Image (tube, rainbow, N blue to C red; front, side):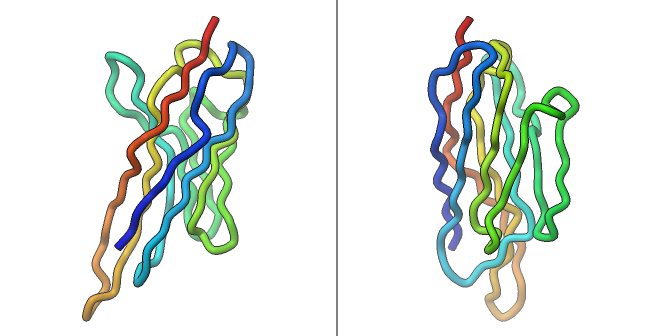
Length: 122
């Protein structure tokens, strides 16, 4: 099936930068789109950015112009480049994959990573 492994989280100062990475692995699947979400303390999980197989991107207004989502040529990894980070962006960041697996027909499969913690200090 599909597994997602995230890396790159950590502690950064206000105004600093981080690059998160998510790798998808497994067999017998294709990925239609991938994205990043985040959940801050005391808040609901929210969309940060998504990217489709064709390279179309979508960003939350709060991060537009500061965050960039990127994928590799095989569409099995996705990175999130974050600059000018703010303290209120401290959150657990989650990778998501919109995938499909062939088993006598294509089955839709949503997969989530375990999350990586980003802490922005003042």
